[in-house]
Length: 390
Image 1 (cartoon, rainbow, N blue to C red):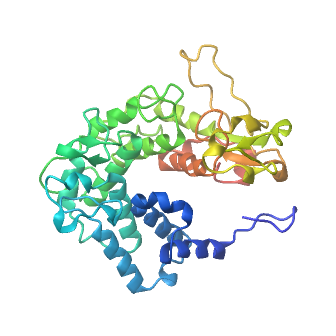
Image 2 (cartoon, rainbow, N blue to C red):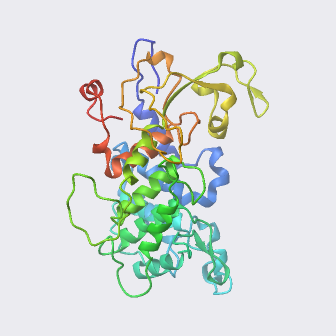
Image 3 (cartoon, one colour):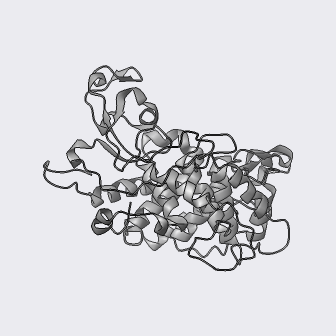
């Protein structure tokens, strides 16, 4: 994004984005990605989805190239179901029951493999569906959450938070005849137990955390809400009288509290003028203030160098006793009454008292869009300017 003058709106350089993603797809990944070789399946899915979103995947790749990408993904499929994250662990003919835990199927890799195949137009005919679903059921922990891999002696390892619950249910949905029923014989995920785990990850303020007694986070909230939506476990909206036989959360404030927490993730922050010249990251002085001054992990935790500008919506009155009334009245969304050039950051954060980050525009906006965006109260001014309150 860039602008030629202060009076012009930023421009989206589509061709530059396309050039970057094609480089990632057809040549070598940038140097910074070298340590992530074991996550190559995940990176491949992001590259393919980016080109697909830009509308050029079909025209900038040949049919032969797309067939090669599909074959590479299937090469990462394991005999007993699921996909590995990259070919570096492939033991080939040397694979045995004793050493297979060194080359395990990975839940995240399996989700991204299926996503990549579908983006490329594959019909999933070569996916070992029954094997994958049986493997998936074995990944469930006693508390209902889903793990990442099966280790030595079939021990579930990794995962165990709403992200893996979300991916597990999506894999189940993609490979089943129906979203709430497993195809074929064999074990299945205990959906009610999984839903119970996700509900236990809700925090007092309406968000969702990695598990009970942790801090709410927008990414976990999206995964938790989306997971419940996949298996139709969200409470029906007030306007819905659709009968259901499924077990839903029966907390009437469930979505209201979550909606309030999501709306309160809106933030705008500015560099602290008195700390611009003194703040250092990894021993390097920042040459100038602005959004380009901090990137990566540093931006998430650089509290010393930021200050909040006035809230973009009226502050909601808070209860004196948060445990008795943890959810203040939902504020109306209002237009940000600030000149664009004065906003160095503007968007959503992922946790309370954190700076804005572009990824949370998806995590927060996506959560709102899953099932209850229409329930957001919107002021007349906002409604006349944007039909979408975000």
